[in-house]
Amino acid sequence: MEQMLLTADRLVLDTHNARKMRNADSLDSLKASILAHGIIQPIAVRAPAGADRDLEGDRYRVFAGGRRLQAVNELIFDGKLPADYLIPALLKPAGDDDAEELSLAENIMRRAMRPVDEFKAFVRLADEGLSVEEIALRFGQSIKFVMGRLALGGLHETLLELVDDGKLSFAAASAYTLEPDPDRQLEIYDNLPTWCRDTSHNIKTAITGAALRSNGQVATFIGEERYLAAGGKVTVDLFEDHNFWISLDLIERLKVERIAELKADLTADGWSFVKTLGELACNSWQLTRLKPEEVVLSADDQARMDEMAARLGPLSERAEADQLDDEEFEEFERLEKEYEAFQNAGRKFSAEQKAKSGVVIYDDRNYQVEFGMVEPKASSSASTSSPKQEKDPLALSAPTLSELGKASTVALAHAVEANPPKALAMLAAFLELGTVSSYTQYRPGRLKFEQPGSAPGSYGSDTSPRSYADAFKSYSDMDAAEIGTALAKLVSRTVDVSQEWLGSNAAMRRATLDAFDVDPTPHFDVDSFFKAARKPIIFAAYKEITGQDLKDGKKADMVTAVVDVAKRTGWLPEYLRTAGYKGPMPTAPEPKKAKAKKK
Image (tube, rainbow, N blue to C red; front, side, top):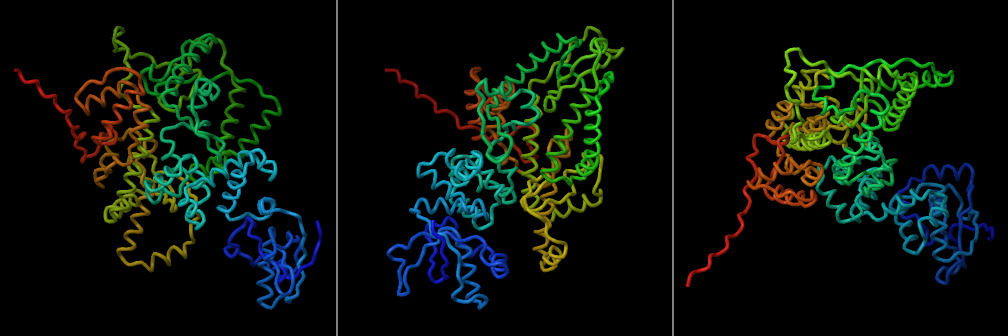
């Protein structure tokens, strides 16, 4: 390696510099630094090629430090530096491949490259035969980081262009990598409503459907080790701390097995009963809970609880006002779980209490397990011989209801945006009711306006809000039709007819969808619905659509059959049906076989 001092006219940008289109980068801060302190970090050059000679002599190729060279050239052009300004350089023996790798390493370690340049540079290294482990080792990055960049580099070219133009955020681009097929990625992008295409939550929902997050409550209830051991398939998220469980049939079976295991273990531990809420045939508010006996905590444990309580107080207030960002929300959830664990450690149920109470598994909401629960006493007027109420075999599970509610909300948001007059009527009704209400059934939405890119019914955004002055100026410049369209789009981001928001108020949900003439069909995920459905639901749907009984057999074959006819006929579950739903379109009759003529 040789140290040199070279003037700008003796330097030419190497074609193997990993960073492209430096003109798009801001050079103001770099030029100010050069004027104040000179060039602190020498540029890296390699020996001139035959074509790099002119009348003045050799011209060295800059493969690391192109921004510094461009900054010096601009300062010379502006008259702020002399033409013979000397630039410190290090001459390194490097071939074409080495030059690109060294340039990539410097850009990663110093200033962030343009994202697409970085993604593609990693792909080129992998194409040249380097393993993921080798790339990670060379650049001091984790294997997951390198795999994520390779996945981003493999995105459909159209999506990469959108990232390059600043029209698709890094978070959204990362979400599209959940689908490995580039053509399918673009199809998902095109099929999403415009306000969802740059929102990671909606993109992931479109790709994973009814899949479970590996760190969610249902997955925690089952256990990742059990799921994987049973052959469960996983969609890996290279940019989050969780993955997605996609073997829906297996998940349903593992729930049943886990419940049976809990019943055996907890009954042996002395509890008088272990039942699901469905087996109790009562509402959760009818249950009472015994208070466990107090156990004295150690001084260190008590100090930690006090520390968590002090932090949870303000976080809880901000959570109620929907003001937590993603990091704060994760901290809030983590502290709540840790605090609850300390509380449980400081309270124990006695043997006598266990004999008087039991354990309830809330199979209606994320399989939460509660201890010390007392069953409601039977009514004195009830017959002691009356049969036990059985669970409706056609009842939809909580996760399925949640997915259908999301589909309703997205469909409604689309319709609201397309109908400015009715959107303004909805806004007026919301304003009359005020911004806060304890009775969610009074309104099919929330008055909290979401930023562009937010999902209908969600609480978060990948973009920052503009200032009031900018917003007011923008709307003031609109004519009546334009501002009506803009307001309709804003109102569409407040609607929420999800299961979590409206609950069992089906009348409010249906009336709102009818008012906007909503067609939920394009937003209904037929495949996910039937994959998660129990057999009685599949039998009933097939019978309703075709008028025929579906032959019992392997669930996968039954799902294929019912999905096919449901898609062809436009069938919708009762939850999504609106006034315009006329039932499934009749299927084409099978051709009749011609009767053989008698001779």
